[in-house]
Length: 200
Length: 200
Image 1 (spheres, each protein chain N blue to C red):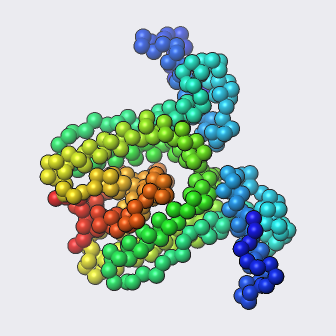
Image 2 (image 1 turned 90 degrees about the vertical axis):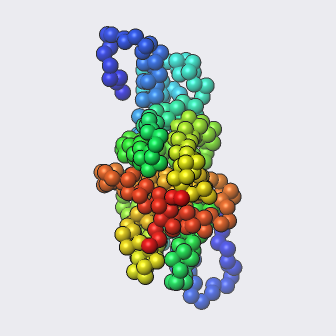
């Protein structure tokens, strides 16, 4: 695992510790991507792959589960900015970001390995949920709530159900279809099948 | 692993070979449920756990992947009979059967282990898809097609998208919520949020 940046120059705002952190995260993802479950993963193996000492890891993460959760969180596409006007447009933007996440084969591979371990590592999954999943769910809930407030959506729409329908549908496609096969306009088509049922 | 039936009497229609088959399937599920991935699983280990010889296994399955696929398929609830009149009622019935599958903790556990291996065992997943998944998807597609034919649903409804929305939403809940927490009327609530968007 090498880092994609010049070895000689170290840009301002990118101190050595951040470089080491990135190497540690990459090493963790590489090992999980190679099929190593959380049980087999060790701080020793990560340190060795990252080319750092174990103390460098322990300075930043107090245990393996925290590190793995943070490593997984880096696989997520950043939360996209939302226009804040049309519910339809904002939902499409959020579903596009979801597809971007799942479309990367490394992400799919790592996530598959992790999901198999989820039941055995509740602290890991809890941290991952909090850092990576919950902010994305909340962004979608907020779009739905706004639609209810403005009268664009039914007053009796269950926000949590709306989130489940939109996100669950996108996951259905990304989970079962090969990534290359997802149609470019999938987010639009999902929203246009679902939104009429949510409209006021 | 013991079989839940009297050891002395062997009922008609349940010959010794079927009993052995059941023991082999149970042994396979037990081992996967204990966290053993497909790579680690061996015909030897299954035979030993089931109390049968390896030849008994090879008489029925030509390799490990076939056996695992068939074992997983037995975790599915049987396809429920459908009334064939109301689209709403039939969709609720199908979603109830899906929830029944996913609600069992053994099923969740085994499926989680398997999904982590899915990318590495395409033949296994292909057989599982064909034996266990495809008939259930087709039952739901047929309800949607019937609704389009009778005019109950929009003529331009994409059947595959309808399947993705209904099934994806149920999986969202069964995957992320603890099984005990799923509301009893979840299938009804999903259908009642989705169907207005599909209606003619």
